[in-house]
Image (cartoon, rainbow, N blue to C red; front, side, top):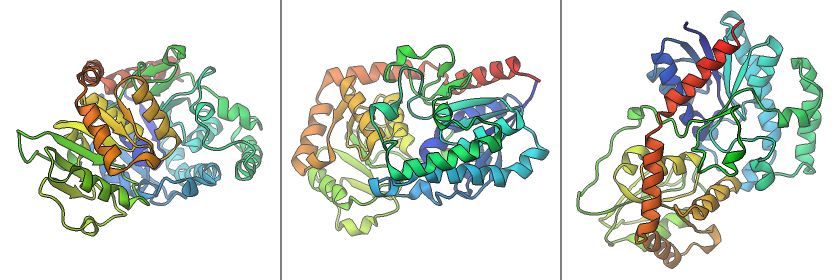
Length: 394
């Protein structure tokens, strides 16, 4: 029976993109799917047949913002303000279009506020590591300490707000809450402590839907290996890295595709070697289908897309979650972690040569990619959501 399924998103590419395949699958199954999104994501949502429910985020153009230590200061308060703003803005629509279930990003706290206030069942999405009684990425790689004055200010405000949404005035219970169903967009084998996650969690792996709206790409030559270099959509503040990469791989055996993001003008890199294709953005999935190696910041989307396509990595993380990913890639023998402070022309060139020349690493990545491709992630997630709906009908 068709249902109204509402996706409450966190307005960042790394959070919205993993949901697109699931949304598309649910639409194909005949469900009405609505998605709360900022203007930037409306075309992607409408292209797959879902309804966009617009809201303005306090994060602004977060999908283009620098993810730095300075930018992260006070993120908890912004998450809370974004949550209350989301509820205020989308409530008029959802009060006239009551969802049967709310499927929400783990950072979209507004979904939990709205769901609790209106007694609507919730499914939680994890585009990164899940959380249970045994594992939390915050505890393993702390982004902020609870003693931080800005964190304490947010907790105080949250404590006062929770009763307004029919939730106990207990912020720790709010943060430690585990939904009846959580969908994790990672394979269990990649997840830290993956064997501790019980049947409340579904490991769908990366749910890569249609990305044709991002454009197409073909290699310049079928005979030369492709090296993709990208520090993500929010890359900023490290322009010298791209100059380092040009020096390291210019006029080498590699055909280099390099995405520099919105904060750097490719023209500022000066004359480029003939083997470099430099753009602000590239259709990453298309390039990875042809790539032999990926130099990446280690965002979870990038790591999953690389593994899915059987491409080993050199990971140069910029923040804690990316460091967790880099260390996991290293630990599982899927590539190499290179610290930002250790990145030079020589170290970057050596890391790429070491990974590209290691057949054992290539084999492990190819096997994991094959295992990931055997799972229809969007169908797995959609099946779990439909089963949850049936169990919680009425």
